[in-house]
Image (cartoon, rainbow, N blue to C red; front, side, top):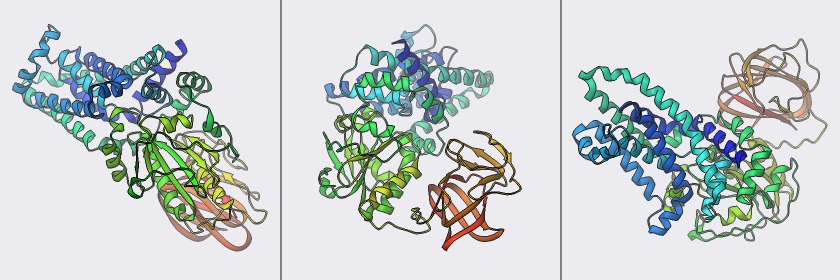
Length: 552
């Protein structure tokens, strides 16, 4: 139990410093600055209480009362607008907050109003879907809430509360001096009310999601070390009874056969199928299928969507399809109309079954949002990946499975066939985790550092020059970033992401210029009629990310 408490608390702390908390911070700061010294504690206390209780029992309670699953979220957003109104129009605030004065001897807006604001925030706070939060959600959805899951939830909420409380207190002290200017007190309160109202409006129209997904997941490494450690997986797996079945495919680095994939189960509705008719894996036999477990408010899931859509667009006519199993994390995600609207707004075109009872999730023994399971044309699970990342690897495996029965795959500047037909330069990863045949300056991990080319390179060796941030799976270009590689191949391909321009030179002569546009994918750098030896030099705009070379 103590280990679970520690894991939950640390996971909460990580959540509170991640992009997921950013949408509620303006409300916490504005709400804290508009009251007395105890108001930040009241706000965070209300958030912890409502988030913990309704995460564990919200879906069950709404079912018992016969209310829509998004009732509480809509009520919370309404309360945020009401509280904003009390700040903008003090007379309204006096009338509405007067009953709350009984909660404390202090002014009504201090503890009572602060706690009510915190209760509202707990219902609109949508943290990142890490393993701890996933475990609690699965237990609550199956109505198996017990002492361990309750303690894990509270410890998670308290962990998230500590940094948020520090921010609230710091913000109050920083802004508190403004209250000395009594002549402008009314304008000050109105401005804080406007901040709360505008933030609530952003939540209504999902602008908070767009802002969060535009930021990188800078706490992913911390989350992997805490929530995805072997100890955490073992403890959380015991709590949920998951981690078996098809999920074992993620433990393998090779494309093995893990047996027949579980059939879709307990699906309440299908989106993006003709007439809403259900699909089965039996009907999909003969296609390569990617099962993607997701939910529309999960930031990690939203960041994978451009890659999924790119694969569906490229390979959809070549015997490949995606089924996006929507398994809800929060009560409001159970509502079909909410999911349908999100699917339309996000531009998701592939079939989306609604797995509201976690039946398909449990059939796969799944534990993560997002999670991808690759299924071959015979209906067997061949690979699984949990979380974000490894998009280039997943795409290569999709192409491999499509090629098993001789499918003709697209070959273009956007997606080239990397299969070598001769002895050529081997696949070359650029991140420090699998960096090989590297020459030149010593690698500095995870921070921007200057590099210099060596005097010469042997065949298949590569080197960096200029400023680079070398991460575990990729390199990110800084000022004057360049890369050299002495290759032996017909064709040279490179997985790239970000935005900017890439200059391609061979033996000092400029060959072409590529425009890199956001989504990480495979680019063709060079094509020759015969196997060629040359010194490739790439000149990068700052911000472009490079992952791995392949050769043909």
